[in-house]
Amino acid sequence: MEDSLTFRRLDERDLPAAAELFCHVFTQEPWLDDWSDADQLRLYLHDLTGQSNSLTFGLFAGGALVGLSMGHVRHWYSGTEYCIDELCIRTECQGQGLGARFVREIEAACRGTGLKYLFLLTEDDVPAYAFYKKLGFTESEHNVAFSKRL
Image (tube, rainbow, N blue to C red):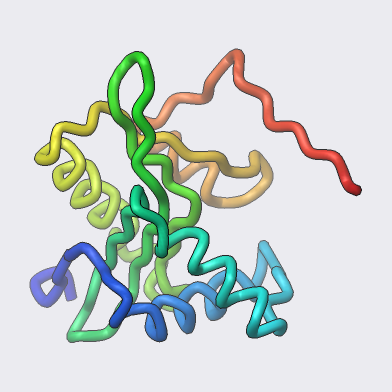
């Protein structure tokens, strides 16, 4: 399968496939997100893909979208970074090295445009945590995520 992989930046024509993949992955274990509200999903995907600083990548196998990264470019004092808001590999394709390949492609694309860092948040009790550590991401000692329900 690795030979038939294609990596590219996505645009608005790819949104239906991106929405399908996103829902397919994140409505299953371990996330179990409820994306049944189509308007909320549309707005969320627009937040991630429809801004002037949005940056979205896809990994295709045999023409089908199997990997998705949605985020934005942020200019920071230590260098410009790609902040990954969502990254996923189609559930049935996980465990085959596609995620690692996808992240390497993202790194190369970002490096090629002068970006200096990849930044993302994940939970420490999901498989993604070990995946990112394995790929050389380091856990920030000083950043803490806060939220408050209104």
